Image (cartoon, rainbow, N blue to C red; front, side):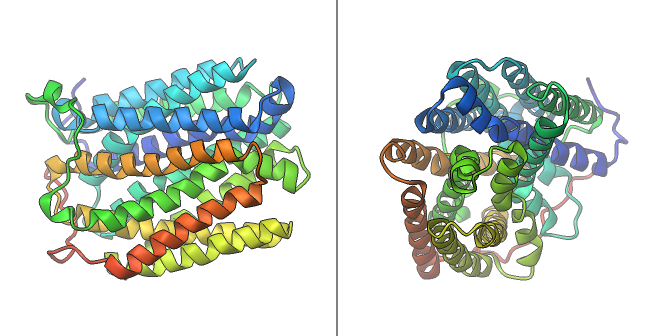
Amino acid sequence: MSSPSHTPHWLGFWAASLSLIVVFAASATPIPLYAIYRAAEGLSYFDLSLTAVFYFASAITALLIFGRLSNYIGRRPVVLLSVVLGTLACVVFLNVSSVTPLIVGRVLQGLSCGLASSAAAAFVTDNAPHKPAWLAPAVTGTGTMIGLTIGAIISGALFEYAPLRTVVPYLTIMAGLAICAVLVLLSRETSPRHAGAFASLRPRFALPHASWKLFPVASCIFVATWALGGFFQAFGPSLATDQLGTSSALIAAIVFSSYMAPSALGGPLSSRLSPAGAQRIGTVAFAVCVGGLLASLMSSLVVPFLVASACAGVAQGAVLSGSIRGLLANAEPHERAGVFSVIFTTCYCGAAIPSLVAGQFARFLSLPQVLSGYWALAIIACVVTLIAARNPASEYREVPRQAA
């Protein structure tokens, strides 16, 4: 289906932004229900961490194999495929009776989010307005966290107050995905189809030459911040149950979202800083906040824990936005999907590997002891960033909007 040439850029921008957000909202929908599934189906901490690992592994697979595909067959078909996979995952979750449907659904969601991370993010950047310059990096850097927050809160609230409480959350998010599909179909394609699609399936890291010098520091930041997000995905509901003494799905969603939601503030707050400046200040704040999380969790202090979590989320948004601004500074339009593929592959690896390790250690360690490992990652990222962070070789420029 070909969109009319006069379709305005703002429609593509909002369609891509909403698709990125809603796909990740879908991936968060089952998370507040984990404690309920654990009690009803006898699932263990290891089972829950395993679902996170499968989710991250499938997202990595999608990024490595299909991360550059939208450069060749167009943004819209890949974004639509992402939406369809997210819908199929919701269908699987309508009947959870063991860990197997959770794993199957999370695999589908991982593929969906992996495709959206490259294609929808590139679609956002293609259609972004000239000003403010921080808008596109902020959406692509924190849209995932905003989506996770929205999905978790809606799911937790509907579970507590709606009828058919293990069904309605998924039906609601499926309606949102359907709206996204319609908006994408109405949007203008920004990456015309051309030869090379099959060759693009060969996994490889594709960054502009000038961006490789910035990647080591950025990768440390991606790993540390997304690792903590993986901790909240796997153990957030259990924190609410075991540490806060509540089985409420809504409270579990709030605990999970206390880290995800504030990340949306980080991009605008750091917009006046250079990419390296945002990285340095953000990683120091992030390390301090994770230390605060650990201290409050060990003392069973709920309010300080939520405050430290929110501050860590803001710091995460700042360092992600700054890192993405730096890596995109020298990227041409046809290179953007590859850049986002590298960014989010690194992010998902940073979430998957610590989640796998944490799941093993959670068998005999307490959650505060597990969290101390994530604090160590934050400290390492902080030290590396303070020593090695640098700005792009050419001064950061606004990403040009393509002509209609």
